[in-house]
Length: 116
Length: 112
Image (cartoon, rainbow over all chains, first blue to last red; front, side, top):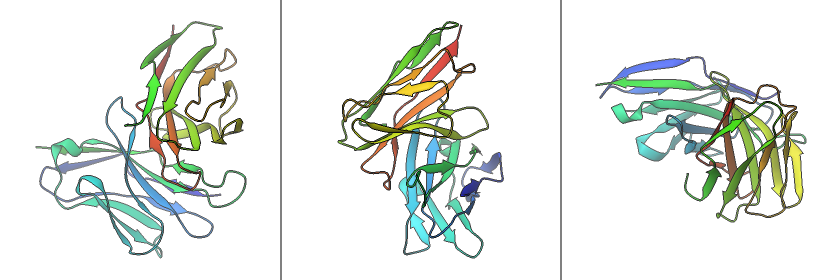
């Protein structure tokens, strides 16, 4: 079965420092991977996705993610964190096979806290 | 959140009552989805619909029902059979099941 794991419940970073939010996955076939961000009491906002091609994917708000096939990882990164980046971040993988093909499987989320 | 609206923002349910959550999109998307979000559990799929007049159960469909009579609308009913309905409910849509999903602002359901 396909799955995605976010090993850290919370990540704390000082403003201006680089940030990394980790995600690992388990899929059959080629992975289709997504990152979303959620601010309190709001819906999820799409940040970026990896389908194929360049392993470094650039997305919204200065975020990027690096796809690493050998480590089955898709970590979210930003060179310089802002206080306004504080939110809940979700990694997701798309089902590739079976009756639920196309549906997203979400990780449990990582809370990012950026301190001034 | 643009293009997908959910109402109400907050909803209170009494014991034994059915309640309906609204989801409307003006993005001309074919596929629509309902998720439930509980603290520390991420998002879990309740129901999804790939086209009008068709829908499929997700991972946690028990106690819920949906309809898809119009392309723009995908209402979710939380029935009295759902014994633990308190959660944040999120609707999403995409051009197709293989495409990026975009989310509405959510409805928080509370039990009185």
